[in-house]
Image (cartoon, rainbow, N blue to C red; front, side, top):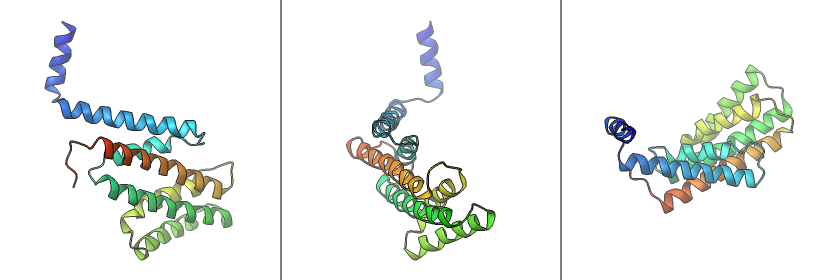
Length: 165
């Protein structure tokens, strides 16, 4: 009785083999990423599995998105740490940081990395931390980079059945 009810729900929800495999692939990648980050005692370990999920579940090819996220995170971490070192967080400082992220992204010909640079700058600059800004920026970069590396490794070993754009 219960089995037929579950199968009926699965059938109506259009759950198929690809859906199950994609869910399993994402779960394994996210858990491996979290486990490694915790094993390495990363202070904000949750950024690693979040980054893994962002890469694995995107319709953008993983290497392209991984590169954009890597470059953007590095740019945002450095700029956010520099601003937080010399200025107190305020609307003008934040606006200047976001604007500079955009300009640098375009000047360095990595315009698609802008969103990740702006997100990282926001995290490093706006969230109150107990450690110096350079340490926060470095940790953020390492945590995100670990998540990207795990996602790229998983997509290499277990490619998605979904089409990317």
